[in-house]
Length: 279
Length: 287
Image 1: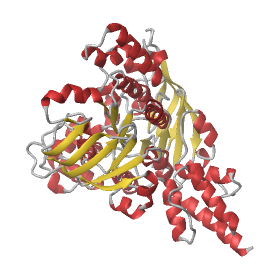
Image 2: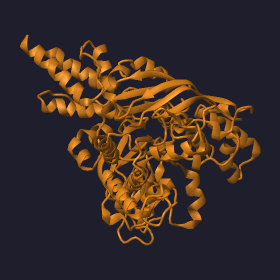
Image 3: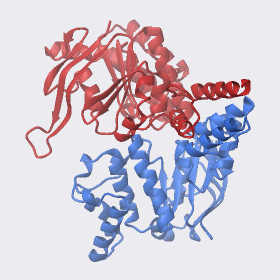
Image 4: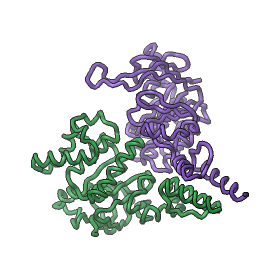
């Protein structure tokens, strides 16, 4: 597999700021992978995300999307077709009065043929489970539904990467599950690369890789099980670990011998049950 | 004293249009003075509609809301006064910051209460203290501060009116774990120090499990469950059916029971779960 996004020594300073927000990021994201990015508020993770599709371009260093330098304005359109973004607030991302018009917005702007737009819009709405709502007014939908419409709008551009910046922050537990299930499916079934920026530890569990940011740099990078196993580091960074890891960690301190890699509720319960059974 | 009572509360949006929607219906509830109540429910369950009735922002289609025994919609003057008694912090309140300085933003509410300059100053400082904002930030522009700080300024702006009932709609949404923990602590401190009633709308089962005395669960525009966190979270299947989840420790405890490990009664915090498992191990060791 090859890297669809390649970041080399990325530094970024916001105009007017003295301090750097990103202080030298090196990161390669494999095509088709599901990468989660965690970090406290102000760690630089949203700033990093904005570099994926040239909303921001590096002050220093390079961001290559499918080999294209995002700093080169001639690449702008191609970069944005390759990487679609979904943001936190669904209300800020919906432009049309009817769901299917909203989803058609991007392909229309890309000059796609009408028949092809129709096909893409229907396919995108089906993929996010919102096809029955195609003629509804977006503002009357729930937060999770709106966010899925926003994702459909991005899918309709047929990007190879979708970067989502805290897409579930404003949603209820059901809406959160809908969005995470949807993006996981896009990655696993369609091979779309997913970069998910989040505060919710539980949303990272299903990712292939978890990157932790702090203070403008990357402080941990590995599988979710590897990253969460370092409970001390996560706490030092103002983050928590999933309740499963926390429980295993605390029980180990009390003399248990549990694997910190049992991340799912079922694995965690099975590990504890096995230890209690042995005694 | 600030008791909230709703009787037969019903609200219909867009009545008489094709989009007519009954948001809440037949809500009967008493929230006594000093209680910390968590309100949970999936999006569209009616919880935001409900809280907007408690300070007169929405008028009931039918039914009544009483604050300290008084119908809050009886006269315009009463509705006006209730806004200072029942403070409502909206979702993402930081988007509503508008003044040039932090101090002025927090002072906006007390100023509208027509307080004297000294009193306003006292209210502002006290509110800033509750949310852990230092005086040095007073002359800064709220727009140049971090998300967590902005959120605290917005909450301070409501606390500065010293409401007997403080209602917060998803106060921790979008904050990192440390920011969440700080805001929850601020809310608990406010309750403890002032004895005010606090109503917390949240999507985080773990948050409400930790701090609420009582949980009111909304579903389909009505109250689906009402009880202590212990009572409510001992019905995980019902909660899942209405689109909610249980706190993660509860989910682990359920999985343990299924695997034949009897961890005992309702568990909804990690601490409870740890001591339950340790107790079992000690019990097993003694055999």
